[in-house]
Image (cartoon, rainbow, N blue to C red):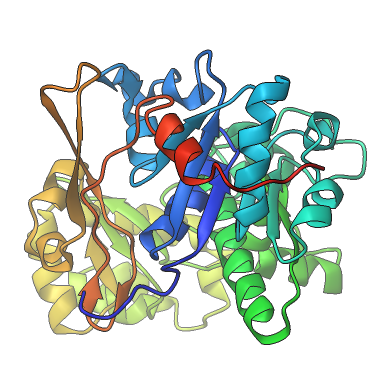
Length: 393
């Protein structure tokens, strides 16, 4: 890009580990911030060793590579007085600090908000926890599946025939990282206007609750409104037939909101003509979805798409991952990028194919080819850079 990225010149210290916190810092790095990752000398971020899909490259997990790209690594023992000198020098200059330890741990280590703000009052101090800092859940393990489960989200997936079905990606961590990055950028904007630093806090659970804002709002207004999952093939607990995913002769087809009788006429299913009253799309949901399932299974997905697209019915094929990656629609988004680093011996190049940041600025996709750092790779250079900074709590 010819114009500066929005967060260029900002220094972010990433004390966090594994996913929600590191991914927040990566999002800020994508926007131009300089991100220094503070890691334990022994082992570093635990995310280096918790392998996603069992994939390890050059000693680090795939998850670590993709959630810590474009960062520098500074190794420091936060219980070692000599190491603390260098860390406090960084803290004094930081624009943003990110941490995701359990509530109270950063305070015990001496790097809680009050201690940090005493020497750097303009800092934006950002924390992500599992379930907030108060209440009976605050000390429970802040892990994605556990947060999904406590939020009730798995009850929204599947049908009445299924057990609770969690979302198959780390959605609580990912959503929390988006909220925290949004809060941080808002706090930085406030600081530009007023000079005030401050705290930004979120949690995995709060993100999961916000994701269900429609359900919670409805229930708060009318307690009788609860989750009642529909018949097989339905795709939303609060939307009537034909909303759902249906098998075809060679795959699956998703159909969104549309008139049941009109849909029946298009696909040659005469029995749907009787459902002229939209109330029956709820009361007879099981019968409607069963009939649709049987009929749609008789032809290939592309056959139905030609008919339904021509009639402007809201529908889409359910693509597999290989089908998506090879599709022109995916290629048109230009979502991929390759990040690179030298191997642990400093010789061979290690390339990781991943996705770019999902935003554009001034018409340009945000891409950066700088890979994740080795543990402590930049410690000495950073110490030398900040050697003249003096700061103690």
